[in-house]
Image 1 (cartoon, one colour):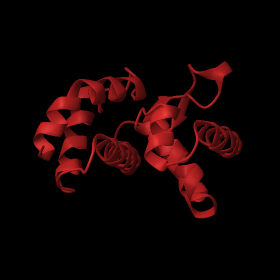
Image 2 (spheres, helix red, strand yellow):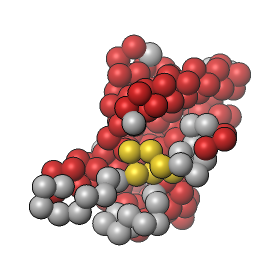
Image 3 (cartoon, one colour):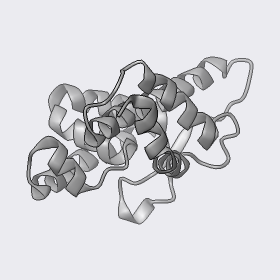
Length: 166
């Protein structure tokens, strides 16, 4: 199956993920636009070996698209809109409705990649890629319990970073 067919097969799933990540009040980045930018990034990678590979690529591309949009918005701040690109918070059960600045999250995730790449990959796949812990465990070849432990550790570090950043 070529990449176009893989993308078509997962279009609705990726659109739901994009909708979940974006806040409705962000008028410059809409769900469909995010998914279309995601597809443009995916096309540069060629065909994915498997559904898991496609979702791994999609998670990375979704992260890149959101960060690029946030950086564009930050560069326009001097003469334009003053609102940062934000996404809904899924890092703490008690504060799911709070907003996270994408650039602050990217900075925290980049630092985590330097010190614990396995933890960062789990965050990317779960948060940006929408994969379940079961799917991630299959993709990475580790137990679901290990994936959950990685997620819990990474989430704590990111919460700490974001709390200090705000």
